[in-house]
Image 1 (cartoon, rainbow, N blue to C red):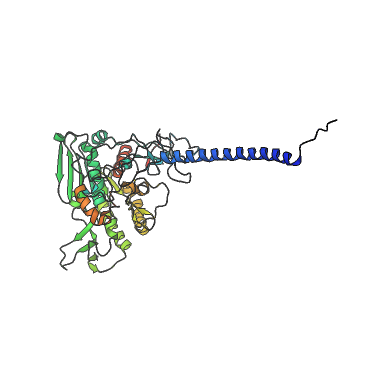
Image 2: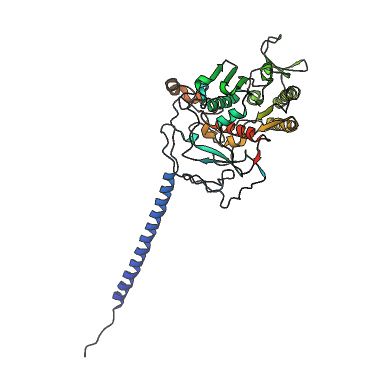
Length: 442
């Protein structure tokens, strides 16, 4: 009788090895597929983010995905083409309380368009006409400011003109307030027939007259708001801290006043506008800048108290406009085409100046002076400066090849651009006729 033998040990080992190897191969293949899926998803997310460089115009942005650790940019209403996943369960908007319209977030919308044509507005300075100067991207024009808990009305130039019919507005200060005036003049000019508009353009004074509304909006250059005496008997340029600017004669009688003063007080020795200070009749070689600023702003405040009737005139003081000129803290505007999304801004501007002006304005609230606090919302907009686009392209190209970094402007703002938002907030403040920042919630 034949003996049936079982599997030999080596055959049994081979069978077991075959099954184990097959199992490992299947697991390995699954792992590869998982990795491929992850990489594909990661690649898709990266493709959704904008890819904008200095030399190449941006592609259309369809979605933005940001980390979840931002603290100040969180939409409660999300446009279809942007996702900012910051707050999972936003609180409902109240209908009765008031909110701070300067506290909010920037929301991207591909549908956002400027309200005026940069190529045809006659008020724009060449140094802020970024598109005319060859800036290739447009994404910086597609961000809209939204308040945390309330709906801010869009700028309505016709409504503003109707409300200010037979009135006069002045904007006074440095070149950044001129930036703001140019924006407002362009916004209003875009809805006024050219035959019904009168344009005044002088060195230190500019104006737009909307004839059908008998409305004038003017700009006067006065960066200190106090007197800078360039013809002093000493032969030196003297900043007189207790004497209001001689241009104040042009301010009187305006129904809306918008002032600013800050940057020129901090200029270093090479570019500062004065040689000496004068206070209480004494010439002073050196003085702490914040003390000089405090004394100068007190002089301005005294002029307001003596010359402005709060029942007839609304006075605004625009807060500090941030610069993005520091390479040390990764806050240089050169070649930047997207806003900063985290609260990492480190101001190079002395904090004592901010304390001085905010304390002063707070004490003037009973005189109807309002604080147009655009500082924080502007800190995010590192993308909105002219950068190298401060002159016409043919001139820029020649100088760009020589030393283009000398022409980077990270202080002023492209137009159309951020100052349009400032004017939207100014319009909202006038519209609600309330303390700036306080308006009915939707």
